Length: 339
Image 1 (cartoon, helix red, strand yellow):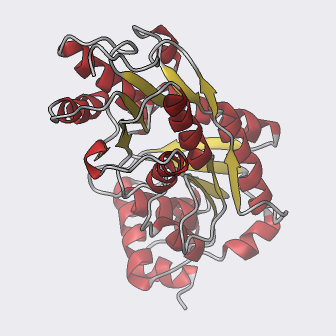
Image 2 (tube, rainbow, N blue to C red):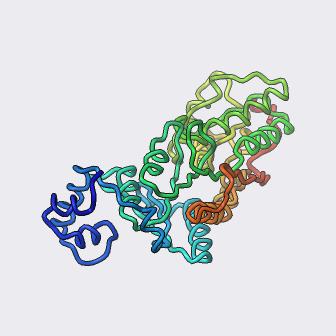
Image 3 (cartoon, rainbow, N blue to C red):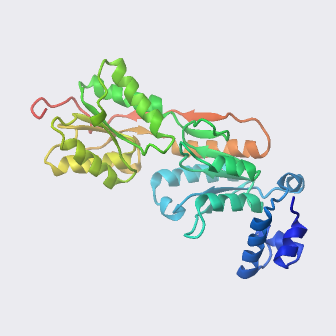
């Protein structure tokens, strides 16, 4: 197994310089830093974090996500980060936000941060069905927690929202109003959150004796434009739905635009339900019925359980926070005049 001295010899630097690169301390030129990192990669060197942690911790938790600066403009992400930061600060930890570049992937950056010792733990956004990040970070000996839904084979703690129950409640609301053709704008299937949301929608239809129609389920993306395109496809069908459940408010906003573009009225002609309860949801025309996610609490829970993991205290493997259906004017009984 390679040692820090082996790395220093390979990179033609002192062991102190290797430590500076690993810890992000001291003054090291970019060329020297790249030479040290190359030597670390060639030798497969891994710092002994367990030994180092006996002396000190960085008391920093990290978030690595593509386009993190842009994502902070998204109210949902910003609230999660706010909850993370507040709970971390209360516990005496700092929060480090990092975004990958064109030359380094999100996973590579996360592993590099883990091995550097600059963070004691990492928060993973957008847990996927097939996600190699948790295993790689466990191998790098850093505490890890993920945002999403439970996934087979993922052993790190997971914190998310109870999407199955939320989607079931939202679909039941539409059924009680009298809707029988209810469409679903689903999240991308590679995301862990997609399956439980679909499961809740399906369970409500089944309990009401309604048949699931494949044509009424569209895998959309995550943007408002994605929601608009998906809704246009539904509207072009021979028998359009009378109601739509969207996996996010952004998809719902796009669906509402598409409905208005063909001269129909949201709520009166086609009901729409979203998920998130973004600040804009209460101010759309009409105001959007949606599932409210406790985003700040989610962020705080992530911080508390990750810090418990870092400090080797018990924490639950999966925590799902409840969603709350907020009924506004985008949902109503189906209009017989239109359908």
